[in-house]
Image (cartoon, rainbow, N blue to C red; front, side, top):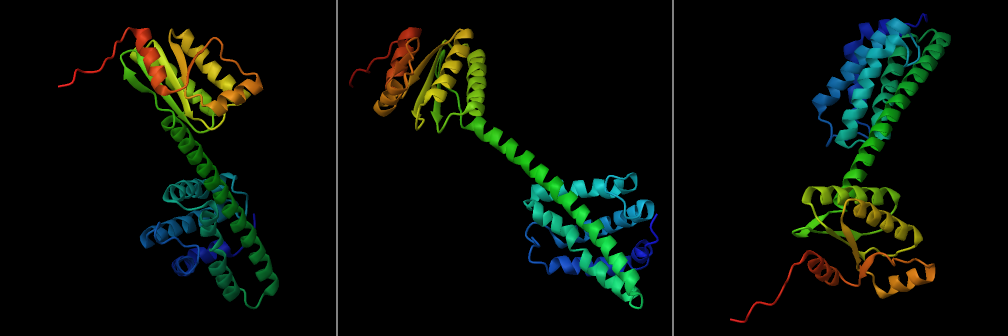
Length: 285
């Protein structure tokens, strides 16, 4: 257990330290006042000072993983999550802790003015303690940011692969952009679920918006077609432009057992024929 005077100083001068710390944060260039109201800034600062004092009294300058720092650890994780949702970057979130060093240094210098050896020791200890907790907070904020990005990517993938019901028992899946393994999985799941939900027997996969079709993309398409067949639906691939057709020939890619059409309109006509739908022009009035 350390003999640091800091726990006692925080207890005696908590109001002064809180005031100086909040002032330090408000003058920092990284402060996002548009995202964090003053009242919330003061509340979070006061809560961490209380948690800091509890941790110092229980575990002194121990690691953040020590039992005595559980209160501070839980608070910092909450701050990382909440500020991440508000739009703070991980570095901006970590700066919340780093900005505490200046007011603490000022307090220690005043109290240990005549004892430079003790001052150096205290400054070193509090620097290490604050830096480690700042890095912990920034790390938690980074993890939260990655989770949020992953979730948004999944949502974008789902929205970028809309399955449209064109007619009774006829579905269409217009694809735009590059197909990779993760997106193909979403495409397959969306299409198969739509086949089950609608009882469709024909599914049109339109690749007009796919810039290139290489061997990997062709394999992804064939896997999707094979999965749909297992569900009892025929797949038609449309939107094969001349440049893509030539590229597929050069690559040796063959869709011999898959119905392909040059345009979406041709694919729809084929689907109507397969399902017994007859479409004609209305008589002129």
